[in-house]
Image (cartoon, rainbow, N blue to C red; front, top):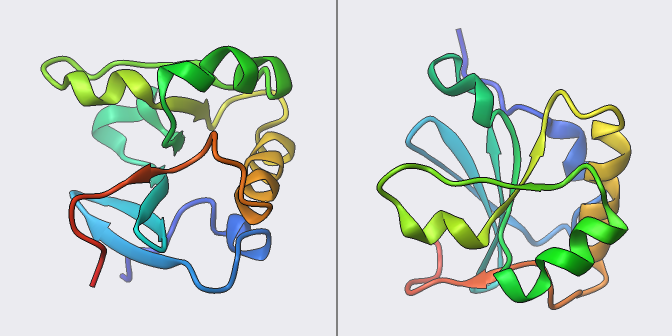
Amino acid sequence: MANLIPFDFVFDYLPSDIIVKKMFGMHYIYLGKKIIVILHKRNNQSELNGIWVATSKDYHENLKNNIPELSAFFIAGDERHGDWLLLPEHAEDFEGAAIKVCEMISHGDPAIGKLTEKPPL
């Protein structure tokens, strides 16, 4: 059975020139040289299922005020994830909040996206 991309409705709201890479059982979405979100749906880490939003702590308060479904999360042993926010799949308005995130990305909001060391191939 093919491994389908979870939460694929987001592609209807993202720019057409995104790049999707599957790594570690998740789908990483890039725009240019920035990673913007990760689509995560795994049985062994269900508490982390949802959309991981690439950002920095400088933007957390504003993003959470505009999209209250977002929450901070941390993966033990990986300090880099302290900058990311999680839109959990069980959020009351998961789809609506995901669309807001995608609209921010489409409008070039600097709060979302992190430059990567190497652009995706």
